[in-house]
Length: 360
Ligand code: SF4
Ligand code: SF4
Image (cartoon, rainbow, N blue to C red; front, side, top):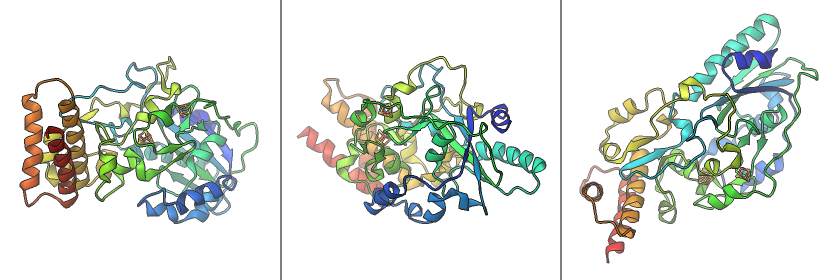
């Protein structure tokens, strides 16, 4: 009943699992010990809860997991890599629409209220990326999908372009309401590992310090110059390891992305971003999960994309266009402007160094 109600509320998939301690405790702790979480120091905290999700509420017994689709396999463009457009920085699909925290939480709260009305003694906790929860492990046990070699949850029908959220409950849930765990369908495939431009993936593990998604969204400092040239056109996030996954290829599922994530905005104009003031950033990121990136971070990312595109132009036989001259001019302007933020300036310096070397 709960699963059907979740689907009525627009979730593409839902399932229930009993709560157990994580089976991946050692793997998680090793990942943290090796520093692969980068500067996301909150991942070092609350691990008692993260690895024992029954502690999220007193005597938690079960969890309802939901998946909210942000890109449908029914759409021609869903799994395809989009072409580079000079002067534009690509946005990962998950960040193109409305802020998923709000979109999902609203409907999960409706569900939680309905559960409370039926079971007044139940304690519940709603989570959408906001509590220490092993979401992917719970999603697998709730029958939503398996954790792929790229570490994302993959549903055999829907692919992997979805958000996860859920409700931890003190309700005892009996079989057959609990769904079967989904087995791993990655097999011998290594497409995501081969395609990752920064070699961030080893099977079932991502080194966040090398991942473009982490670098553009979470990393608040300068970016290692050796990684900058590998970041391609991504100004916010990266979809490559999902684009190449065969489970995201075009397929008729009849399940569209949730209406709040359907957006035409797939990129930002680099020159515009490089001119942004705080107010422009605030306006552009209204209702968006992208507000996580501070002004200097998004401008740093724009500088890196600009440099990468100009390097590609200079490596091609094509004559220098007015647009590429304008982009190069912008980098030079930022370089001589004393107000340019420090991490932006560092990226400009790496970029101009590389571009001028190309001309030597
Ligand atoms: S998001 Fe991009 S950089 Fe990160 S692991 Fe996937 S392909 Fe690699
Ligand atoms: S690309 Fe292949 S190995 Fe990677 S997650 Fe998809 S199926 Fe698994």
